[in-house]
Figure 1 (cartoon, rainbow, N blue to C red):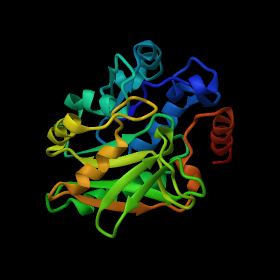
Figure 2: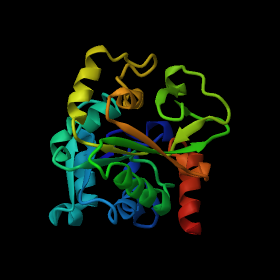
Figure 3: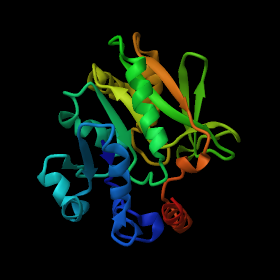
Figure 4: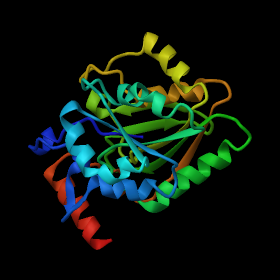
Length: 247
């Protein structure tokens, strides 16, 4: 599942970030698809109304053969709405891998590890959440954990103060699907909206899964903080392009 309904407005562009070129003819979409395909049965992408036709053109071959499907988030209501608004595409699978649509720096190793670790952690049928986390000098998002629980996710975009050296995600999450939609619906009954975005954010939902009896939270350690770098600025885009050239 790739939520990609946002637009590159902070980049001064009118192009969905998943369609940005890293090299001639190679977009962020091609990079993410290469990372995902060895480890998932199907890829579903959520786009904006304006982004639907261009993305369908870009991924026409994969859509035609049934490897990729597409749905539309009609209004920008946040990542949680994008993910669960498309739940009919993933609810029949045992697990869902969520990858933000601008994570061009995600490594094949991290992708492999999150899937393998999640399979092992849930092999006895116990539902779970698996998250790769990396220490960041100045985290945009910070995860507060004990040895066994995810307590809270702090988000600077919503006015939270993240601590230097705190653990941040790299834009990829693996979740069991058993009961997941029901837990999300209960969460929405009392969920706070973000102070800045006005959205019901997805990340604060993750500690709720940690508190649900039977759910196990597993952290996959990541060493390279560059993997957490999405594409939000011109320098981020140039970094991703240079990393692609150097790979």
